[in-house]
Amino acid sequence: MEKLREVEKITGKKLRNFITVDFGREEKRIPDTYSTVVENKDLYDFSEDIKFALGKDYTVFIGTTNFLAPINDEDIKKGKRYSELVITKKTTWDDVLRMAESDAINYGFETEDLINKIKEYDEKYGVNVSHAETDTVVLEFNKLPEDLGELTKDIYEFCPDIVDQGTGEINSIAESLEDTNSIFLWWD
Image (cartoon, rainbow, N blue to C red; front, side, top):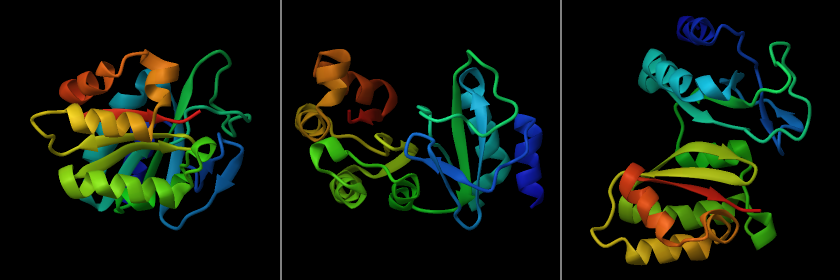
């Protein structure tokens, strides 16, 4: 519990005993899982500071960022962008997707379908999930192939919206992988 108090010191806010799903419209209670909503300008600094403070006993990930319901937090200021940081006892990336209820329902993929596809990447490259919400997942790859062509094509087939409704360039997938070893997956 002392470590969780450290999170409250870092963010200046009390932890909530729930996370949100379905674009923030639903509160979900999970044992040993907490969240806080922080202004986007502080998101990555807070996330790194919290990971450091909590150590290996906890998993920290970005949850809801696209709130379609009022955020249940007194510290929210109108006109500013907020994101949810989720803190849970150490868990696996697939459990993170289950907690967040991530899906690509417009493509016929429910949570377990996403997990099955991402398992293929995990077996080949090793993955972590740093962000999971209703229609968004950020995958961090532990290693990448020397030639990104096949992986780039596979990611595009899995998540065409990141190109078709996003960058417009399939090369942007390879660029993201080369620059950050990660890819932002989003299904509209």
